[in-house]
Image 1 (tube, rainbow, N blue to C red):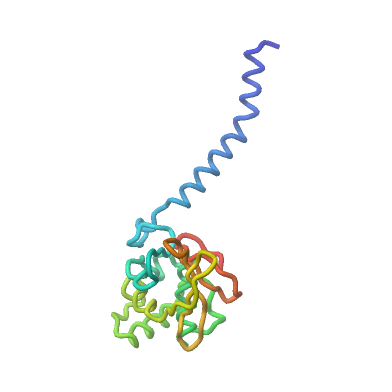
Image 2 (tube, rainbow, N blue to C red):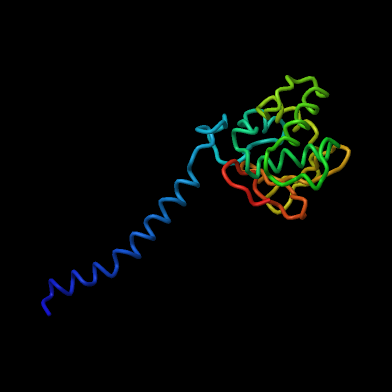
Length: 182
């Protein structure tokens, strides 16, 4: 067998796995770098993000509603806020922005002096963040509690980074716009 045919055979055998790896890396990179701005975030990030002090971090966040980021961890974060404030039962925290979440959001916005459109944008996020009270700074994170009728924990890296929140399971998950794990 000639060295040229051996090279072709090796290349053919490597081509499919290499293409699969390239595709997987490309998709992973696309998911990781897809700016949330393209789908409603003002920060251009795929997560609820902050830096410096905790105050005001959520005032530049994107939109979450029945049409935008409908099924996401950010929706789960918002539902957890609605639950903590008594607007949604804990059993409705599923990360899907449906009719119940929309109706609860309208009530929440109305009761907090906001435009009651059922869409969670920067003004609604900023108003909700006012209920976060810093509790501790350790392990490289700032920990806080959302202080509503019920409490739940949030955290963010001390200097800058992606917000996480305690899901109903008690596990911290990232407040991501583009996927749902809650």
